[in-house]
Image (cartoon, rainbow, N blue to C red; front, side, top):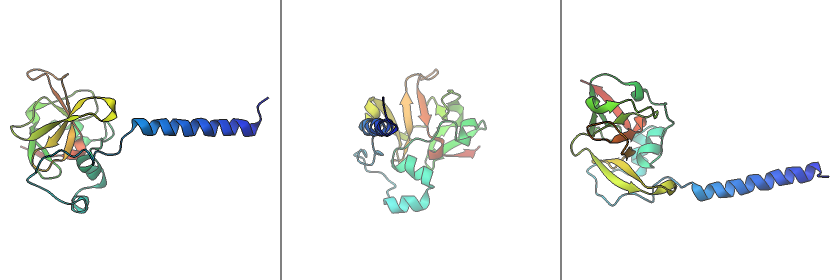
Length: 166
Protein backbone atom coordinates (compact mmCIF):
# COMPACT_ATOMS: atom_id res chain seq x y z
CA UNK A 1 0.00 0.00 0.00
CA UNK A 2 1.36 3.40 -1.00
CA UNK A 3 1.48 6.08 1.68
CA UNK A 4 0.48 9.67 1.12
CA UNK A 5 4.12 10.70 1.58
CA UNK A 6 5.34 8.29 -1.11
CA UNK A 7 2.60 9.50 -3.46
CA UNK A 8 3.62 13.13 -2.97
CA UNK A 9 7.31 12.26 -3.37
CA UNK A 10 6.48 10.41 -6.58
CA UNK A 11 4.51 13.34 -7.96
CA UNK A 12 7.40 15.66 -7.08
CA UNK A 13 9.91 13.37 -8.82
CA UNK A 14 7.77 13.16 -11.95
CA UNK A 15 7.34 16.96 -11.98
CA UNK A 16 11.10 17.46 -11.67
CA UNK A 17 11.73 14.99 -14.48
CA UNK A 18 9.22 16.77 -16.74
CA UNK A 19 10.81 20.14 -15.95
CA UNK A 20 14.24 18.73 -16.76
CA UNK A 21 13.03 17.27 -20.06
CA UNK A 22 11.28 20.52 -20.92
CA UNK A 23 14.55 22.40 -20.58
CA UNK A 24 16.04 20.11 -23.23
CA UNK A 25 13.35 21.10 -25.73
CA UNK A 26 13.11 24.81 -25.09
CA UNK A 27 15.70 27.35 -26.01
CA UNK A 28 16.55 30.72 -24.59
CA UNK A 29 15.57 33.70 -26.71
CA UNK A 30 17.71 33.84 -29.82
CA UNK A 31 20.09 36.50 -28.53
CA UNK A 32 23.05 34.18 -29.06
CA UNK A 33 21.89 33.38 -32.59
CA UNK A 34 21.96 36.93 -33.88
CA UNK A 35 22.64 37.06 -37.60
CA UNK A 36 26.05 38.18 -38.86
CA UNK A 37 24.76 41.36 -40.54
CA UNK A 38 25.51 45.01 -40.09
CA UNK A 39 22.28 46.97 -39.86
CA UNK A 40 21.65 50.65 -40.61
CA UNK A 41 19.84 51.10 -37.29
CA UNK A 42 21.72 49.77 -34.29
CA UNK A 43 21.05 50.37 -30.61
CA UNK A 44 22.09 48.83 -27.33
CA UNK A 45 19.65 46.54 -25.55
CA UNK A 46 19.00 49.33 -23.02
CA UNK A 47 18.20 51.80 -25.81
CA UNK A 48 15.81 49.30 -27.47
CA UNK A 49 14.10 48.70 -24.12
CA UNK A 50 13.44 52.44 -23.75
CA UNK A 51 11.97 52.67 -27.27
CA UNK A 52 9.86 49.50 -27.33
CA UNK A 53 7.16 48.02 -25.13
CA UNK A 54 8.26 44.93 -23.18
CA UNK A 55 6.36 42.68 -25.62
CA UNK A 56 7.89 44.43 -28.67
CA UNK A 57 11.36 44.07 -27.16
CA UNK A 58 10.82 40.38 -26.45
CA UNK A 59 9.68 39.72 -30.04
CA UNK A 60 11.82 42.13 -32.08
CA UNK A 61 15.08 41.91 -30.13
CA UNK A 62 14.88 38.42 -28.55
CA UNK A 63 13.11 36.52 -31.35
CA UNK A 64 10.03 35.83 -29.26
CA UNK A 65 6.53 35.05 -30.48
CA UNK A 66 3.34 36.79 -29.47
CA UNK A 67 0.26 34.81 -28.48
CA UNK A 68 -1.81 33.89 -31.57
CA UNK A 69 -4.89 36.04 -32.09
CA UNK A 70 -3.61 38.75 -29.74
CA UNK A 71 -2.75 41.43 -32.33
CA UNK A 72 -5.34 43.94 -33.53
CA UNK A 73 -3.40 44.01 -36.82
CA UNK A 74 -4.63 40.50 -37.51
CA UNK A 75 -8.04 42.04 -38.28
CA UNK A 76 -6.71 45.14 -40.09
CA UNK A 77 -8.48 45.41 -43.47
CA UNK A 78 -7.77 49.02 -44.55
CA UNK A 79 -5.47 49.97 -47.41
CA UNK A 80 -2.04 50.97 -46.19
CA UNK A 81 1.46 49.87 -45.24
CA UNK A 82 2.75 47.72 -42.40
CA UNK A 83 6.04 49.07 -41.03
CA UNK A 84 8.67 47.81 -38.59
CA UNK A 85 7.79 48.77 -35.00
CA UNK A 86 11.52 49.14 -34.31
CA UNK A 87 12.63 51.47 -37.09
CA UNK A 88 9.54 52.37 -39.19
CA UNK A 89 10.84 50.75 -42.39
CA UNK A 90 7.91 49.92 -44.72
CA UNK A 91 7.70 46.11 -44.87
CA UNK A 92 4.39 44.91 -46.32
CA UNK A 93 1.58 46.37 -48.41
CA UNK A 94 -1.98 45.70 -47.28
CA UNK A 95 -2.54 44.45 -50.84
CA UNK A 96 -0.55 41.30 -49.97
CA UNK A 97 -2.23 40.61 -46.61
CA UNK A 98 -4.52 37.59 -46.33
CA UNK A 99 -6.36 35.62 -43.67
CA UNK A 100 -4.27 32.52 -42.99
CA UNK A 101 -6.29 31.25 -40.03
CA UNK A 102 -3.11 31.02 -37.94
CA UNK A 103 -3.82 33.90 -35.56
CA UNK A 104 -1.00 36.10 -36.87
CA UNK A 105 -1.02 38.74 -39.63
CA UNK A 106 0.03 36.99 -42.84
CA UNK A 107 1.27 38.30 -46.17
CA UNK A 108 2.18 36.57 -49.42
CA UNK A 109 5.02 38.98 -50.25
CA UNK A 110 7.11 41.71 -48.54
CA UNK A 111 7.98 45.01 -50.16
CA UNK A 112 11.17 45.04 -52.25
CA UNK A 113 14.36 44.96 -50.16
CA UNK A 114 12.40 45.25 -46.90
CA UNK A 115 13.30 41.97 -45.18
CA UNK A 116 16.14 39.51 -44.74
CA UNK A 117 15.59 35.79 -44.41
CA UNK A 118 17.74 33.56 -42.20
CA UNK A 119 17.70 29.83 -41.50
CA UNK A 120 16.29 29.18 -38.03
CA UNK A 121 16.90 25.76 -36.47
CA UNK A 122 15.54 26.43 -32.97
CA UNK A 123 12.92 24.10 -31.47
CA UNK A 124 14.34 21.13 -33.41
CA UNK A 125 12.90 22.21 -36.75
CA UNK A 126 14.16 24.08 -39.77
CA UNK A 127 12.32 27.30 -40.54
CA UNK A 128 13.06 30.56 -42.28
CA UNK A 129 13.16 33.55 -39.95
CA UNK A 130 12.15 36.97 -41.32
CA UNK A 131 14.08 40.03 -40.11
CA UNK A 132 13.73 43.75 -40.78
CA UNK A 133 16.46 44.66 -43.26
CA UNK A 134 17.18 48.01 -41.57
CA UNK A 135 17.30 47.16 -37.83
CA UNK A 136 17.46 43.34 -37.76
CA UNK A 137 14.28 43.05 -35.71
CA UNK A 138 12.67 39.60 -35.63
CA UNK A 139 9.34 39.79 -37.46
CA UNK A 140 8.28 36.15 -37.74
CA UNK A 141 8.78 33.29 -40.20
CA UNK A 142 8.00 32.49 -43.83
CA UNK A 143 6.41 29.21 -44.91
CA UNK A 144 5.67 27.70 -48.32
CA UNK A 145 1.95 27.14 -47.73
CA UNK A 146 0.62 30.53 -48.81
CA UNK A 147 -1.68 31.62 -51.64
CA UNK A 148 -0.82 32.42 -55.23
CA UNK A 149 0.99 34.14 -56.81
CA UNK A 150 4.00 33.39 -54.53
CA UNK A 151 2.78 30.37 -52.57
CA UNK A 152 4.44 31.93 -49.50
CA UNK A 153 3.01 32.82 -46.08
CA UNK A 154 4.93 35.50 -44.24
CA UNK A 155 3.55 34.82 -40.75
CA UNK A 156 4.38 37.98 -38.80
CA UNK A 157 4.10 38.93 -35.16
CA UNK A 158 1.67 41.85 -35.10
CA UNK A 159 3.55 43.42 -32.18
CA UNK A 160 6.59 43.79 -34.46
CA UNK A 161 4.55 45.88 -36.91
CA UNK A 162 2.81 49.23 -37.04
CA UNK A 163 0.15 50.13 -39.59
CA UNK A 164 -0.21 53.36 -41.54
CA UNK A 165 -3.42 53.76 -43.52
CA UNK A 166 -3.23 55.03 -47.10
